[in-house]
Length: 182
Image (cartoon, rainbow, N blue to C red; front, side, top):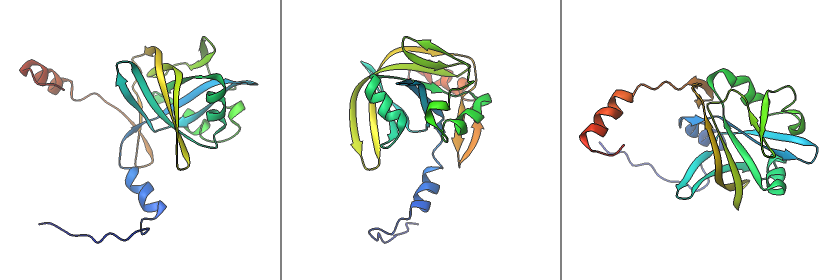
């Protein structure tokens, strides 16, 4: 059975759109960079791989974000994929003074960019391109360095934190053995 729904321009509410988009599982990351007065960072859930050749990714940051201003100034940033034990960092880096968010948070440095400890993965990027779109800015980064760990990633779904568990490994092995691409 096919249902026809009439499209009414401007009828989509922000709340409805947010609820719908919350159904898309997403990784929870913290973007860090060097600021004039020390390291800064913010939570970002809109991060995706752009290309393998060259290795690159895109991060969507609010156009008024202090972290964005510092990424533009420094020309480098780190994408830190939070692990399932780091939910409190996702909220810490989403609110409050961006220049104080790394206070007391274990981190090291890759060059002049802070790397959070105990993440599932981290990717150091050089800023390549910036695209302004509505109230956000898309930041394209050329990946220069990566680190992965055995920590299970933190995933957000329906506005709640979930633990990503690899359950499809046997399925993936079966597909690869058949010669199909995953």
